[in-house]
Image 1 (tube, rainbow, N blue to C red):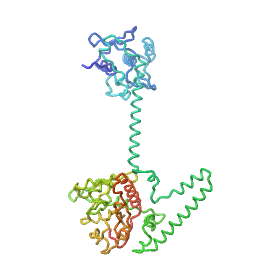
Image 2 (tube, helix red, strand yellow):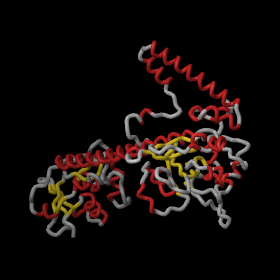
Image 3 (tube, rainbow, N blue to C red):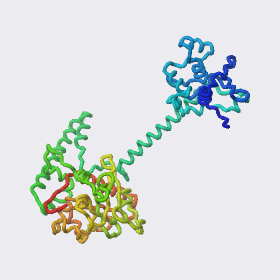
Image 4 (cartoon, rainbow, N blue to C red):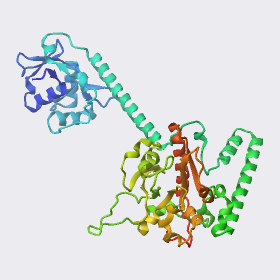
Length: 450
């Protein structure tokens, strides 16, 4: 039999078993005698229980609950007189109904019981029978409040840690202070102008205004030149100029919002199992990234795709690992988890899979695209291809890219051969660029069939 006594459990079991009359008050010692125990068991009348009062930071005592349950039949005035005689405080009106329901057995649980503070109210039978003086009511109350404060602090720390973990999950990994200032394709000149204006620096604000005007003229000029060209002549603008222009906005109506490439893919119908007519894939439709089927040091293949594209780690130790397509990775985009499929071959692709391709890692050789001929209209339409999908060339920085790469609209991603801690910088640059591409309108050309 347990040596511990919980005042709430003891009193409730005594009342439910119909033995409330066996509990006697020893007025001069301010104790309650529970005669059902062999030799009797005395508990302090003023010992706090874990029952939270409606009064702030207050708990009902054993004597308060016992006296109220003994006098349910009395009027409020007579109940008040009885409390004066015993020397206890009345149970408040707000507390009476919950106390009555729980201790009479009509309710199996009660929200008023503070499970955090409950251990502080437990007494030991052996200690009580020894005649030793137990802690005073004030000491027990203080322990209960301290225990509650500690638990609340632990909850706050867990909540704060959860918030910090969420922020860290959403933030880009940074390897240096320079990365903090990178925001590809975005200009904060208007924010800077507002800051100068609010701090009364009119001349600085005017200078920024001139820079904003010049920037707007540059964008307008780029848009006009791009719209006037077609086909291979668009390549004359140069990669850097095209990258900074949102191709979708060049042909868009200002009063009509166009869907981005990512939105178009997410709205595609999912492939269904013909037997059950259930989708093969759960969750949103996945965009597809193509990597080379062959591997050379510094490049990427299916084997290294997950470690680099998911974790920002170019792990050469995985060379012996066998991987089959598709490899699935996930990425937080607009506060939502978006999955991607990684493939190294398009030979068995359906029309829907072709339309889901958003990026290609190239090895610099034209034979990589031998299976793309039908989708390119039977010609080498690499200018249109790399406007429709984003092209990347991953390589070691001390290796010169193939000559063919310079003719294509490809983003170079140079890795440091012996500095793996800098992989995350390239990883951030890649995803910043790809996310910007996904938020643009899909490039459409009559010569491309996907």
